[in-house]
Length: 393
Image (cartoon, rainbow, N blue to C red; front, side, top):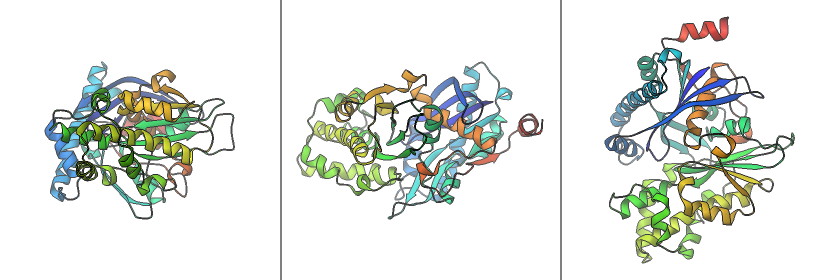
């Protein structure tokens, strides 16, 4: 099947589009990226998204409007990717859209009661004429799970090593990890959870401290000019999230704009200079990831596969190499996968599994009572033909 995966991450940089060919079934499933492209958000759109993520600054009318307006952006992005690939929308079987997460409601006991992703699937199905699958998290949450991390199921299908334990570490706005037992191990269960803040605190701090000149610490240039304040770092690592047992997830609700601005206030009270602040927050990202491995990895990790925007920050990567030695570090490209479009590809795979009525979660990943078929199907213009070709023939 030809499937488009659409993803907008915590950092709200733009829409990642993965045009994929998916074949087979679990145990013999393949996912090939035919074309990948990122369409950056207009600054005004990005500001609307970030505002709607803030419960103190958003309103129901703004969220309702964003749900539709952002769907138009997603639809334009999907159609743009199809055109770039030299294809037509009639050749696409499904769209799998994660949308953009505005709120992930983690309660005091660590359970998740709700998770809200915007991007109206009906707009996508109407504009592209392609049957669209969306709202992937809700069913897992209804089954008692965290609703995330959903990428871990595809890691399980595609990225296990024949003999060694692997960690697949994403460093986006938040960090998340999947600990994968080797293919030769048929008794150990995989583990997945959010490690904590990835780039989110860093990006916000960089924007504030440079008065908007930087939206992130490009190549770690700001962090390189400062030193890590070890005393403050130790206090930051005392946040209760890090020691909470998995399964667990987090987001901007805990490590977002409000938290970052409060940290800047604290840093100023300590007399820290701008580059010290960035260096310490950079160390927080690397150290909370390494700490999660020490606390929760079920076996020595032989290889770490890095993905997400944080893999481009050499300061973070250098710290991780030191903290997690002697683990070997790889990128997704080293194993034949495009890092930039891995998460978008994941939602193409999940859409494929949903269409075929197959569960796309493992309870060990999310803490759900059972594996479930994810998502909601919105018929597009190709719906009847797709049914005939895939189910009724």
